[in-house]
Length: 518
Image (cartoon, rainbow, N blue to C red; front, side, top):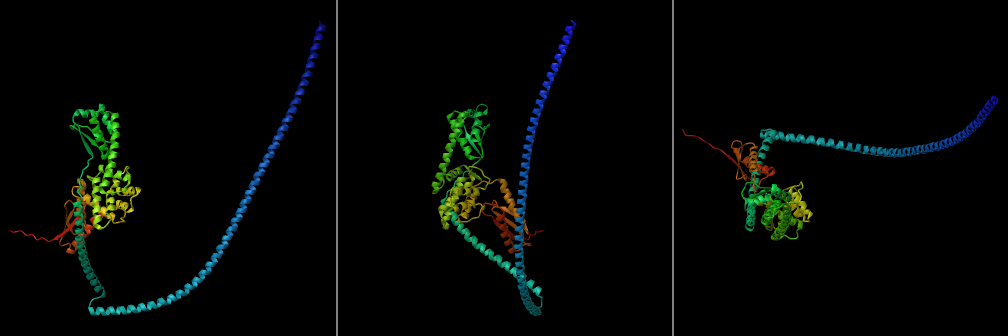
């Protein structure tokens, strides 16, 4: 038993020693492998670092070379600039030397010229002194002979000449004005009478509302529709406000655009006649009526041009002429006004030896800027001129259109002719309506303008503003000054105010003696 234990122990010890040696051999082998791998890794890292160092060196060398090249180029550029500056400096130096030489030469010439002028001035001064002495001697002799001084005589002579010249000038001006007025009034009356004899004009007053008459209140209710849907549909389709109130057998169409009012009236008439009134039918009828009205506008324009004997006009201008039928100006139908102006222009042009056809064409188109399809921010005369230019009208006609309110310069005789005929058509009694406020303001402006002159005591605007009576104090103004005052007031009204026709200024200067019996 003991031997077995001893053998077992020995076997265990021998096995432990063998395993120890075996483990040691394995560890040494593993450590050698690890050392080899570490050496390989270190060599790889060393090679990578060497490569990176070479790349860094190459990059730094390239940057250095680039920097050196850039610096060399800057140095070369600076040297070139320096050479250019030196050349410019040299050139300027040569130019300065040349100018110095020229200035020296000019100085020598100016010195000689100055010496010559100095001598001449001395001679002139001597002559002036001699002349003044002789003049003074003559004045002294005249003063001794007349008994008054030269200054007093000068003042008296100036006053006498001034008064005489003023009186003669006023009388001369008055004679010229009287003769011109007589001849002008005679010729103007002759031309206007002939024009009135040959032109019959009608006046149509356009309002902002159109009244549509219906047969009964039952039809009015059908027009309104359930909860007003028919009325709203008609307003949306036509752009016109429709007023249905307690007025019996009437519907009011309100709108500033007469074309839209006419479309609404015709559509409403067709709907009431047909009896089928609902939103879909309303839209259909309104579109149909719009086409009819557009055709009517074109037909009106064609008929107008044919009646006036005007040919070769652009179709768009013919359409705009037709639109004038539905427009008004100060209560005067625009188409009727343009026809009147065209006829007057033709008649006056014939009397004055101008081209009647051109004058009639310009008169018809002079207010074409009041009916554009869009609404630009331009005066109607300028807009009409641009439209005429756009549609290839002749330059003299375009100028007559643009200048009939003096917004552009008049270039031909047609321009003042169109302006005069436009004023005649507008100033005809009954042709236009005028607001009460503007009428009163114009009369007050007339009276206040005359009152601003010294010596005026009272003013009266009469004949609807076509005559101004001015009362002046007899002790504050002479007859000649009264004539001058009437001329000044007329010129100021002409320059600063707008008025129809002409204004007559009458200045009254009188002395009244009043006594009472006891």
